[in-house]
Length: 350
Image (cartoon, rainbow, N blue to C red; front, side):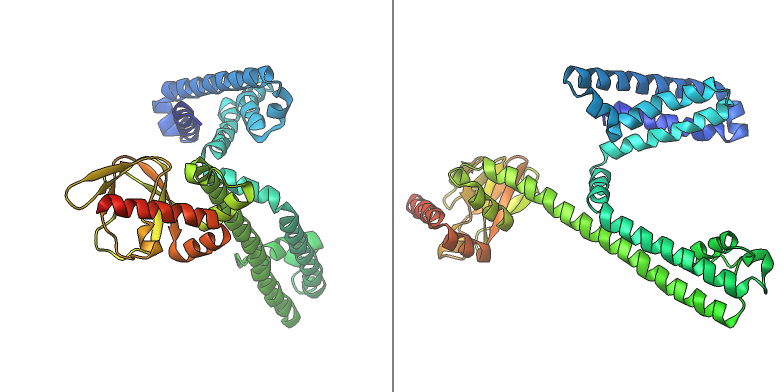
């Protein structure tokens, strides 16, 4: 989403909320109405531009049926349609709540969560079936046990359904409670089942979200690794092997990465940006994208021999000592290249 779209969503939803506060709306109804119509016009323009672009790219149907396309269409059509069918303006503008859904596309975490819900839809639906089964069985059991004692609250299965939902979700409003001994035993079992059901849902979502996060991090690191010339000659399998070992580090300008005399346990590859090596004697050497440093600590001398600082915003790929040894064992050609570079730098620094 663009910044104007965020502003439009914030302004539109704020004006919509203002409609429900009579004293405030009476005092500023002109401004509120103007903001609502301006936001609606903006979303109409945004929808028309996206639809036109999608049609030109021969993706009109795909866009129209996508989540973004449906939200864009609903954001524009729902309110005028409600007004056309005679709804009161204050009620019609409540459909502006759909505008909030536009934020889903602009927040990476929400997009990631939506993908998790799609990928884990099978297990989530299975737990939902278990939830409904427990609710139904509990409703029937409490109706059988409590109907004679509390006919007003447990006089039918649908009436007992409210109690079952409240109890299974462990909300416990206390407005409907069983009084018979067996009824209370059933209630205890339902509460315990509720903990299990929601624990399953939480576990599925947490596992799916963690897997999706690892996937995104892997793809980002893969992209960074593939841009480093040092790894350019590797095949896809080898790059995947390297990607699993490297971790990404984003640093601002003028950040000290290592100090002379420190013990080193990792080396760095520059995926983007630039660093400056401050060698003994005042000599400063810049290293740009594709270069690597810190390998001296991994091939013999574990003490850092120079200060290294970023000169601008940089993205570094970090390879730890244990992973370095494993990688060198799997790919001897990389070991030879790094060893040769280390010897060359030793000669230069003498």
